[in-house]
Image (cartoon, rainbow, N blue to C red; front, side):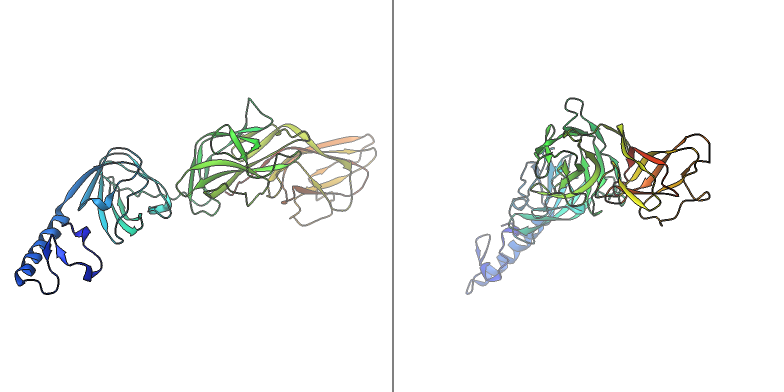
Length: 388
């Protein structure tokens, strides 16, 4: 009688391999029962069972140490009495699928086994198991958390077939927004004009319908079992997550124009460069601090890449400061400016390319020492740290 079949309730153990040990049993029965129990324990300790991998491998039905062969993905270990422990050896590469309740694994991630790996699993009852120990045959750690804020790949590109509505997301890996979970996602194409559906060439919007002249933030999202996808949301911090998805990381932003088409752009690492630059300001200079909204993502701070022109009539001298709203507001002068013109008898135009941090409302600030010039701000793109 396998030890695993004994009851955890002492009073329920009235026989051992059909040997009566109930109250009033013959003395010889006790002797035989003890011998049988010793044999069962020895068998349990020495037994090695081999079983093929399957979606559900019934560990509780096996004795002693269990060798799992094959490469079929395992999602469950069957039902067994709580507290039952099984030592497991793997002979090949298969995936143990993490589940926060039924298959708890180190690092809260799937594990891809290697031939020679060993592990110890404990039944928690009701079909739930926890891995208490996992040892690589190579001696390496199975869980290597990515560095805080890590992001590699996961870049955005306008889709060629439907550039107005679709974005191609490249494969990549990152740490989630809470720095608690590694997300790894394959390359997918997601549609902004359709509700989210898992997979490529499928809807990607978390809620509502695509709107004109609107910023959409792009996320990679993941379930606890490692399943990953991409998502669009107007929220820069709290996307509406599809059922089963827990982890997310914002990886960029796109904007629709007045007709609803996604603005064309090029991404190079953290830099997003618009295919067509946008004239966001064309106005008279002002001696008071003036904030202007420019074409950079809202809801987050980015470093705007802008070309600024200053047209000064003759005669005249204008000094201007184009700054972040978080900087101290200062009065421009001949010794404090980032664009300016000398006194001249003819009209002058000066131009400079600047990188200025926006506020979360996509705004920067301008101020001049007079009101006689014209300030033109052309937005070329932005640098987005994306949580790094």
